[in-house]
Image (cartoon, rainbow, N blue to C red; front, side):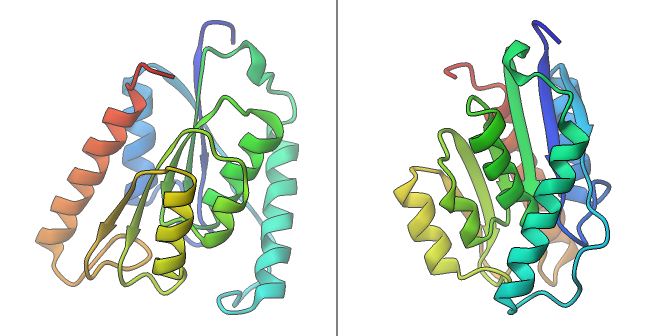
Length: 188
C-alpha cells in the first residue's frame, strides 16, 4: 500500500455502510483516490441505548471484530489514512486510530461522548441537535476540548435527518461538501 491513500469505514450498529452518510462519503473517498475498506459488526447486544453496560460491551465487541478484520493492514506504509465513523463507529474509529494509526484523520458522523475519550489529533464532526443517542451539550464540550470542528443541525436526529425530505437532501449535500473539503485538506 505504499504511496496509497486508505479510508476505513466504521458504521453504526443499525446504520450500515450503504446508508446515505456512509455511502456517499465512501464514494467521495474513492473519487479522491482512497482505497476504501468497510468494516461491520455482528452478534452485538440489542436494545443498548440507555444501558451503559451493554454500550460498553457492544463497543468492546465491535472493536475486537474490527481488529480481526484489519489485522493484516500495515498503516505505516500509507501516505494518507482516513477513518469514517457513524455513531458507535465513531468510538471504534477513534480508538482504532489511537491504538493502530495515530496519523489517521477522522470523519465523525453523530459521535457519541465516548468518541472523545481517545486521543483525537485531526477530525471533523457532525451531529443533529435532536439526536437521542448523544448528550449534545457534552458532545459540544468534548469536541471543543479536542479542537474538533463540530457542525450541528437543528431538528435533526441520529441519522442527521429531520421531518422535511427537501431539508434532508440539503443537509446531506452540505455534510458531503464539508466532508470532501476535509478529505482533500493538504495540511496534514
